Length: 208
Figure 1 (cartoon, one colour):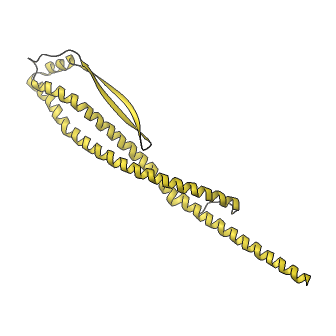
Figure 2 (cartoon, helix red, strand yellow):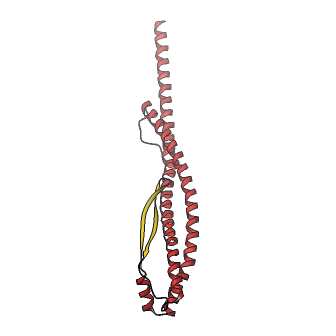
Figure 3 (cartoon, one colour):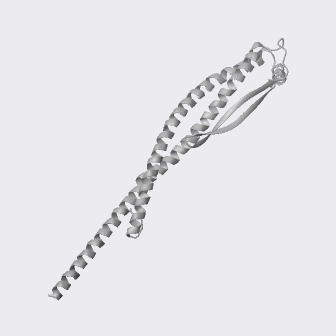
């Protein structure tokens, strides 16, 4: 289906310029889509690895806290955790990945306040606290990668729609319209040439 335009030379020139711009934009978007897909596959692979690691480690960390509570008491465990409360500073940031703004988090642990009695608490509590401190950055990294995957997938879908619209709708319609206008102009030119030849022949016969 061609565009609704008047078959004039000015319109033909304008459409040819638009077609060049559209084809250049299509190429750039295709290159961007290829780049996005490459980054997406890499980040998705990192996310899968991080997710499996978190899913594997989380039950063990929770198990240590459960064992710590069983081997002493819940009250003693809660008091010990309260006495060793530690500040956690989560610094949100962002960066650009193939033109897409993605999150970037940084986690910093402050100094631990106080302590607890090693007599009344179990060794599992010590292990649980250490493992939890090691586990939190991994959990945060997994969440960061998950959000990056989401944002890249949205950008890929948006870019793919634009590429398809240019490739299958906009550019073909312009090409068809350019052919139509060219055909019309050629037809008009042939008609004018034929008319001029008839006029010239008529004048020549009149002069004889």
